[in-house]
Image (cartoon, rainbow, N blue to C red; front, side, top):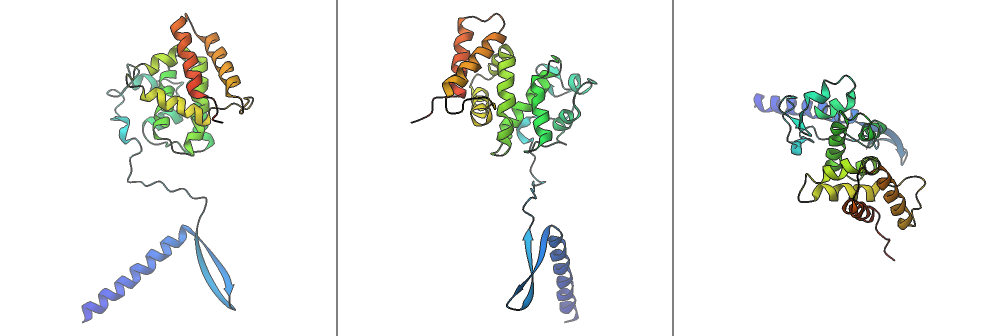
Length: 230
């Protein structure tokens, strides 16, 4: 019998501690209901919780060994040992920085248009991985840098797309641009004008372009900004 009461007592203590710990993550308000003061517990609305038991890099095929992992035919050491490599980018590779819908993520993804030819493949890899794991909120941050990269480096862009014979990468990128790749000066209601400007910019930056490349640019522009359904 004594063991039973001891068990009940310990269960009660544990339950109280659990409730107290849970309340630390919530907002406790006191309201008067029918002349009685009542404590009301509300969850913090601005708190975003990521489950720690889920590996967000699960499908990245990484070992986090900078000599074993490679990006664009170079070991990751080539990038992370570069003194000019962005610290947040390095943290992304090691899984210590998880992209979210915030300013730090926006700055990281914009690095894809860096003029540093040695580090740009690393930054492009980061944008590509972010596109792969993006949800609705994070998706608002990938389209803009993806479009800028395609416009500024069209030859590189198509070369990068061609490493995927199934076209999934291409589809993910243009859908990302379709979702959030609008510039402030774009005429949103007239996709034909946006396509025209996109084509003009890509063609002007295209090196040794031939008719096939021009056709690919035009198709890409149409995929990114199709005509609106009436």
